[in-house]
Image 1 (cartoon, helix red, strand yellow):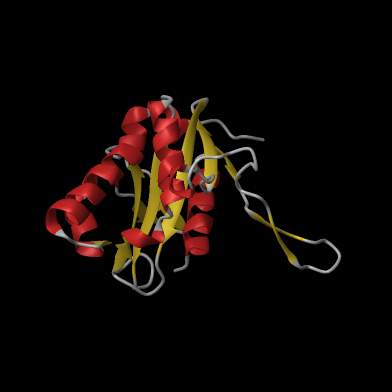
Image 2 (spheres, rainbow, N blue to C red):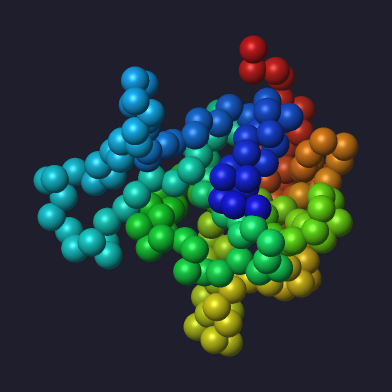
Length: 188
């Protein structure tokens, strides 16, 4: 499951719950020749060192009229997700918006089995995700979140599989943070 699969799964989840979500793209294609065009992700006026800059994450969603930035992650055919898969600029972006009081999160897909067996999905708040990453990486020297670790330690963020896609259980942090997320009216 590539990152694009994680993005597609997140889009289906948002559609199922009538959560407005906008996919931010950093690559566009020429409508005539289909050549990829890479947008400048930072302004030329930004003089900060490269490690301090930010780049936009995958989605901006509105849950109960509150903005939530989401980065979608997952690795195809593996039972873990490496921390190195998240660009430092994405971390900077999530940190910067968290400091501004905006909810930020990570949608994580891990596992190598067929859905739903052997795979799991977690919608983790950025603060908790960062705490778990720091605990594993800095304290234990582990370089990835394994499927087993996620199942055991990220229970309050785990999504459940239902026919055709992931669902948000009532115990999930997003349902506790935004109680009406399970009953939003249709967008259109």
